[in-house]
Length: 541
Image (cartoon, rainbow, N blue to C red; front, side, top):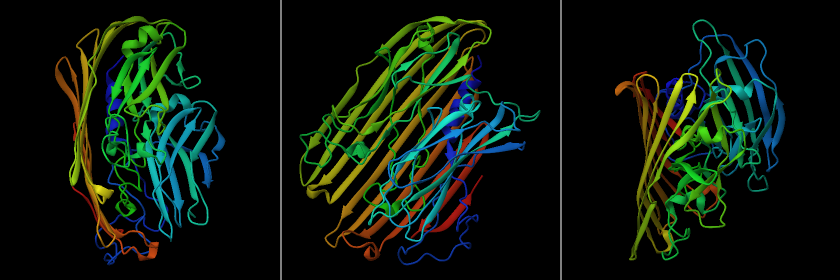
């Protein structure tokens, strides 16, 4: 088994998905001269949503497109249909790209949604809030890793839960397609998992008996309109604040196999397009990952010897810190499996399991400006071996989490601010025949924002979000590949609260700079908007 698998997973994590130009009114490559001067305040129309993320690379090979779903979402009724594999592009593709095109007009909240094919979640997304005149947006995602799912006819289920009434008039109209790029001599078939599995009844997993690498991915989102949508702002019962959680804002997504802790991770602090009490922050540029929720990945290969016994095993995902009995998190699981095709049974064993005590402390300081300081963290190391046709391979997975945050607010919450940093460091080493192969990923998420409501009911939100990661792959201690991501969003928006929409007199400046560099090259794009007008779209690489 090649550690190229690790490179594929790292690249997918770092590059993710990017919005594609929508087939609407604002599709031209924007420059300061391509748009009119910004108005003094928001009107009834603004630029269609876009982000600075890189486009999905598409091979110059024959392609085939399949429409997966077309639906108008007015309520919580899922779209159901049938997927059939494409004809004319083979069944071993160099790339598979999912595209979601959407449009909505009028008035509507941000909504969450998913797309399942054969029960496999291939997209978790949210929607932008519309202008009265209407917006269009598109998202593209590399879904090549799910190729095993796409080789057979499957049931399709898609839902963007929505409410349409006399006030919230926006009907969400979407179309989802898959484009398959055939393999040729220049662009061979992509290296993908042999199997893509889901949990039976949402709880049990039965792997092929010759599995040599197993990776679980969890699309974890705190949502549902309650306080878990803003979990990073919750406080213990002792503090006077509107969102409570017994142990404060520390959250950790855990996965267990047969009751034994198998993986830990920090959830990404996603801000949806109505977040921080100020939709004007997000009308054009959404926060990082808002339109494409990236799954948390857990390497379960140390448990392969246990899982390969042909029997079902219980797999549980839970979120540490959520008050007991309280809903608000969704965590569907896919399991990616690579098989040893020269073996009918791969045996092995778990050889090491070391979990440190979970740290989570909060300090509440009362005053005219209340303050809650939080520190938390956790460490887990697991190791195990598999006996494959190419020898014994020992995999060691280590993960360290660390969180610090300072939450400040006044009585009545007319001032509410947070500074927070989440670190999630992971190392995966495979040691078998030849030099050991190691992939190290350091993820850092940041949030620094304040919302204030003045005596004139002018509400102002200023916020900076950071999504950063470095990844290094080495072989025998020598670096063979690396990448560095820095995706930073900054916004400052003000409007008059508690008045009809046409009396808000809203202004906003927002920006995003997405930088990705490494052994594969460089990408750097910067967007700026003022009152919904795109004033800068510049690439520096």
